[in-house]
Length: 395
Image (cartoon, rainbow, N blue to C red; front, side):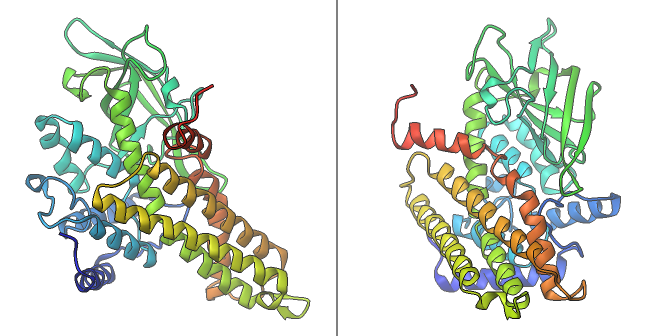
């Protein structure tokens, strides 16, 4: 049953109070989400465990694994909105995807082995999908797994742009188990403990001078037969189900767009152009207004999609539209904010609200291209829409 407005307001108050009481002293920064030292890592793991214990995340899991019997999709939206508004550390997207895959495709033994460690914060997961020669086209993966006579598997290959790989404990890998197959066929999903011999993680420093992504090399990595998630050869459908879940999650973070607009307005009200406030300059005010409208359009689609999702009336490609709308709007707003911030010198102390807004806009712009790539590039999203929504021919 859909919660009433009063119930949702009560949940918002509960989440806000919980954040105020339990969130770690780490302000969320775009492009700087991963911990920088052991102390931060410990704080983040404890924070994620607290969110699980309170029933704010993982509420959609089966009840026997900690889910809530009264869970409703609107609960998830309220929780993520309040976490983002508070600029508290957000739950790791890769962990959510892994949990989704395990809940829907894992064996009971796998659920019992891995889900409790996710809830406790003991295990952080990453996705071992993209490769140097495949990128967002994950159907082109060449990392292979060969079954041995004793039933174990040997994995060899390279994965790249792996978010959180440097502090993750577990990986969800898409590899080719049928060497004669091409594209979407002959792929399987494996659970890969990153402490397994033969796994090497090499961090990649981003343009924002942070370590968020990594290369992961798999060299004769031996895994047990029960490391396969789902059936052998079912990998493509499993990962697609997970990515559809992740893509809507990215689009659902539309509250980040509101925060961008808020920072942009703060900046425009304090910067001075030819002796005037920037917000009073016609072309600047007009552009800020146009961007605010784009944000409202993205929000309107998300609202509409959530309602249709609740009714069971979602359409093919909806998750891709949500992801595309969020990512492209985010980049456009952040790019203009960074341009405006760099065009005029700002005389304000580092701890002032306007200086903090300027810094956030710069960091958001540097990270914005990642949103247009992660979870499937914008080009891939448009291809999906062309095929599944518009029913256009492949050639």
